[in-house]
Amino acid sequence: MKKHNFSAGPCILPQEVLKKAAQSVIDLDGSGLSLIEISHRSEAFVSIMEKARHLVLELLDLEGKGYQALFLQGGASLEFLMVAYNLMENSAGYINTGTWSDKAIKEAALFGRVVEIASSKDENYNYIPKGYAVPEGLDYLHLTTNNTIFGTQFKKIPQTETVLVADMSSDIFSRSMDYSRFDLIYAGAQKNMGPAGTTLVVVKEEILGKVTRKIPSMLDYAVHIAKESMYNTPPVFAVYTSLLTLEWLKAQGGIEAIGEENEKKARLLYSEIDLNPLFKGYAQVEDRSMMNATFTLTEPALKETFDAAWKSAGISGLNGHRSVGGYRASMYNALPLESVGVLVDVMSDLERKA
Image: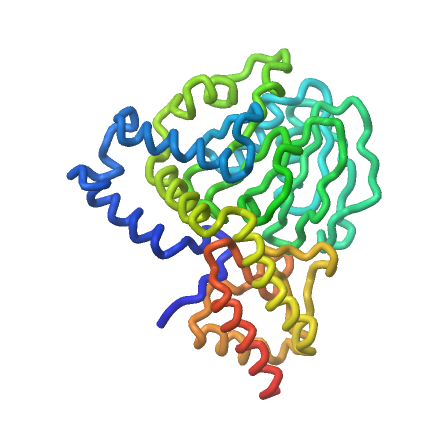
């Protein structure tokens, strides 16, 4: 039976990407060697890294605008630390919209004063704060554009003259926007770009070199830029599979085209959640994520029946995070509209039989 993969991450990737990546482990492009046994300094892999870094900037429309793309390691969790290490001299502002923002704040506090500009913790992060003012004098402002656990997403990016940093781990490459408004973007690959093991960092070079502290080489963005993202042995499989995913995205028509498809998927599912009396959305309507729809049953007694129905339909990864409970349908770029339709049919059938 075909599986409909709604996992929050590591998540669904295009089938054609998985097949080519799998083949590369046996034989990379007819070379007679496996991707994971060739030298990372070989012409073959250097070309892969160069293509991947270039394609990132092309898709985000950041070519020729002073940005560098890096494929690093340590996940977004290490970026919580690296951002502050490289950018915080005195103080930084953070908008706290969930678990990952909270963790980023904790790491930044090791390097200076953290100003929590706004927070939605009072309602267990079911909305995006609004109406706040960004004080002057901050080294940077940090936000998490999409929140996988709670199912919220920034629809409007704050207007600020401050250096703007964003954790886009769960909605990178998913929607059109002016990415040049951000000075630094980071994202774990395992949500929308590739397998776990590499982290994308896109940084405007002019914001670096401003702190007075000495930065360890492995944590210094400038070092990684100078070494063209090859300072140490890179995660070759994760980088290559990310390149394949980026090429797939370009072939679909790029970010604008995939964004339109993501909107269709979100509209279909949220419409069912709102019209079906057996379900209730968790996030406030105006802040709902296109990537992660969180919802609960209004009749807990039906949980066993519903769980059996969606599993029988070949649906996987639908259980919600323990912080919210209920269900979470993650609709990343590679999830087809057909899969959302299967879930909606199961939800509708539950109402008919209730």
